[in-house]
Length: 497
Image 1 (cartoon, rainbow, N blue to C red):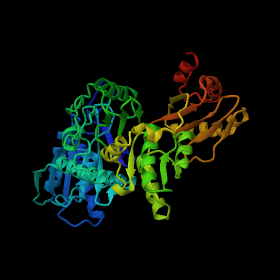
Image 2 (image 1 turned 120 degrees about the horizontal axis):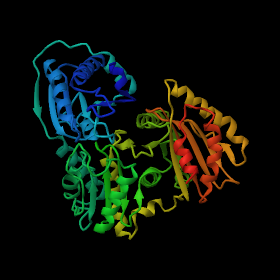
Image 3 (image 1 turned 90 degrees about the vertical axis):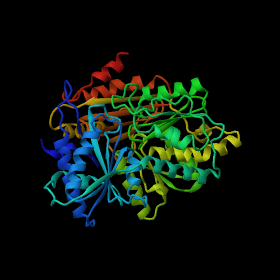
Image 4 (image 1 turned 60 degrees about the vertical axis):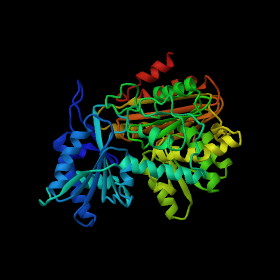
């Protein structure tokens, strides 16, 4: 198998455990080749030898064996290796920044929220996360390095990273124990985020009674560790309400994403999370631009502008959104936050690192102040209008030419949908095609785009009037049915409900 097939944008991902319908393509042999590629990449970047490499993994079952295989290659090439054991993706980047570690590269073994049989690799240098071009280089330059004597030692990264978060929250809140008297529930989804309860919240004075699924377990027996998943969010909501907690916090497997649940059970993810973080940022940096991905609501744009900011809607992919924010800053536009609806969020003040724990830290800095003012966290997003109904449908596309088929369908919608009353193309969009929807089909919007990584068309529809989306679906079906390679089974199920 070609290693290049493991590239997933700026990450590496593959099947690490063979299942009934999945064949393993990321095992120890591939891990060794990728390790060689990382060494050649560091050499190509002009990094001085001997390289210092930090490596860690989340709770996935295959993390330890892949890590051991990579460490073998690194030590045989003369590297100094720090084995961090259980770690998080943001912490692995910080291993390149903390003086006591000062790693030339931080390597995290994770496949984020994907099913248990996946694994993957995220790579950082001291300059930031690897780009698509870096991953392409690594996967195509796997020749063995010269042999030299290296070494490996264990190190505790998570405690150092947690202490850094604690210090930032204390500084931001102006208090040593700002969470005294608060009950905050953590749901780690059996990923790597369980440390947050004891090493961060408890140190800051919080009672973490009711926290759940903190133990690492790569089978993910309770729910998918994904803040964008309805079942996961329902689980943390239930825990908050049952414990009468002041806040609920949920992480994905490797803690580069997070979401929150308010005291009254409101789920603060997707557009709601963007609104809360945008409100915080715009209080601190008036007039800042917020970069988001394309599937954000029209109401969010209005919310950001009412708060004195600007929204820059860009293409999906967390590296794409982050890189656009960096580019805007370099061009003279102040941009403090890059965030996707999937909850990937990166602040300029935090290296533009997508860090789920830092997102929570920003909220915790503000929470004591809000409580003193007898205000709720949800007050920050109170002006964000909520749609009456939303729908997302993912349409599988068969065949090798799925991208071309998808693009043709997007163009068909662009040309044909405006012929129907109530549909107008929205030019403020850089991914797929977006329409504003008005009478006779209520008031809302629709976005049709190609999935970044899968052979899918993704359709997202919102409306401010209940019952209007179902009226639109036959129009969409008429266009989609013209291409036999697009599976419209889910659409038909919605129409026939």
